Image 1 (tube, rainbow, N blue to C red):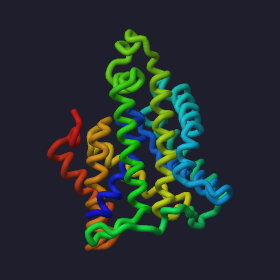
Image 2 (image 1 turned 90 degrees about the vertical axis):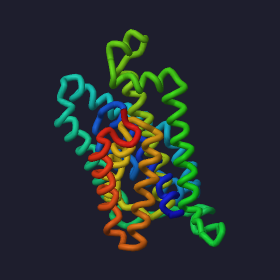
Image 3 (image 1 turned 180 degrees about the vertical axis):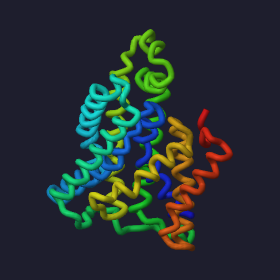
Length: 280
């Protein structure tokens, strides 16, 4: 149970970008896991070359990933969204981005597992007879901080409220003095920037290879839909539910069942409440 709760905090961090981009902007960015793995390799390179803490590297690289996300969205907008071709061709575009990132990492670093070294990796504390590994605790705490930061951004700032409004009524948003394309660029950049830190958290938990992104495509979208499209609180709750479910199933029935149970929970919730737990 404890491991599942901690894993849920990490899943929330990984899913925040999809919750923002897919949940609020209605852009099916299936390349998001590839950006997370790219963040993992950035943490690996800085850790192996300069000894930097992986989470610190994730924070330092957020401006780089934000700019990268802004460029990717502008390409997507100019090539597909502006012409109304985002439904299918846009999906193929993001699949191509995912493929390019994964193949580029494979060509550069091979298919060997890569890991990082930090002071808290390998250590644990004992609370009431329950061992808590720092490699899970630290990513969980950072994930909770990221969730809170995104919630405050969306609820307390003009640009955050504009992001929530852009998918509802573009004309009304223009009347409020905001350019929908600019707002989507900012939101997409923030979503990709979150991948930098999420990737750093991922590689502190377990070693990664370029193909690790495939393990998270389904999880990210399942958490986003289960929590309710665009709901940050729902993303956190759904991430904890899936984390606990996967941890229990992996413990008692084997890890091969964990992902199947997660999607089973998603199907049950959608059958009872199609909008998700916190959807409107």
